[in-house]
Image 1 (cartoon, helix red, strand yellow):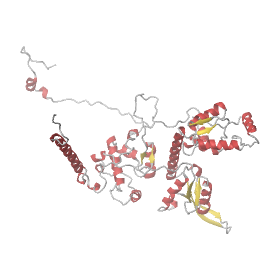
Image 2 (cartoon, helix red, strand yellow; image 1 turned 90 degrees about the vertical axis):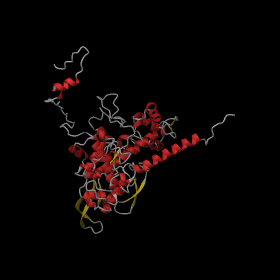
Image 3 (cartoon, rainbow, N blue to C red; image 1 turned 180 degrees about the vertical axis):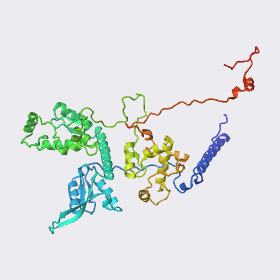
Image 4 (tube, rainbow, N blue to C red; image 1 turned 30 degrees about the vertical axis):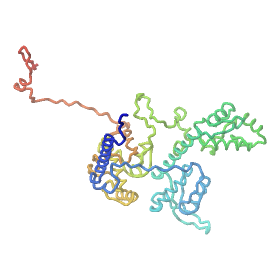
Length: 492
């Protein structure tokens, strides 16, 4: 028998020892590289600048439209919303003289009140609500009493920003529900007028109602909360009520004949109870389907849901530069607000934090890489709870933001060397989508029409006054001689 090499042969032992030595060398290199001595003093005992951080993502557990218990802004009285929205607003007005303007435009009343409840802990209400001095008649004494009422309305940029954020979150929730409903394996409903059963595809049921029974509730892809809509329609039919004129009849046959003759095989568009079932009522802040339909270009250019591309008719078909894919929104440099549109984010930072990134970039004429370093510098300072202008450190982010507001330090240091350093090429947060959107920001000076000015580049004429080639000795040394004895002539 031939001798076979055992697992513990000298060759195997040598290979294992070599691999172990490589692993140890790699670990030693990483330990030296990530040591505090390799980084500036202000980063020591903190998260290393090369260690990626992750921006926080808010959980989204509560389903839109579900009943939620919330307390009054000023007292512990509890209300169930949205069913008691009006009672809550009336209580705040009558008991605490706080008026919420246009509460029907607030997508999430509990979140809206939570925001101002936290603000009231350290800020007087007069700082974020419009005070109005009025005379009111006391119910108990029947006397005129003077006092101030405070109005929360979207005329203040902060309030409008809050309402728009709640609107965007509501739209995201509704679109998630719609996406799940389109392929719901548990969907199983019967037709409202016949015994045909439909499974998995709600659109097939609505198309059946439209084409076979001439009963239309709109395009299926514009509907949401379809189970609740069908439950409501079935309840109306069981109560022998016409869904359009809402009259009640004695029998189902009389109801069906009425709907056929009067052309009432459709829902009542004036009944706001049906508005929550249509996507168009969630698309824009402060607008429902009636406001959208009155826009001049509504019929010619109907709004479409956003897709993965920013379309442009004159764009090259093979240009993928505008592809967004699954890219999420960008987070504000100073707070947790998230925007999917970079222009909205820049507007937010200007109006809320008085930090005009576009003005800074255009004034200093920052290149793309300088913008990257500036953003990473601000992210790092905010993470360390340090002022980005003076460098003072604070115990919490709230204290730092208060310092920035009071001292008006929402600005970059005058010394550009503070942030224009190579170490800020490393992203502070590995999922910082602000950096991905930099290409979308208009660069530098703007023309009168809002477009970038064309820059004319003039060629530079350089006249060579003296040249080493003019020296005969140098030309003689570099000119090769031909075999027949004649030199190459370089003179014109």
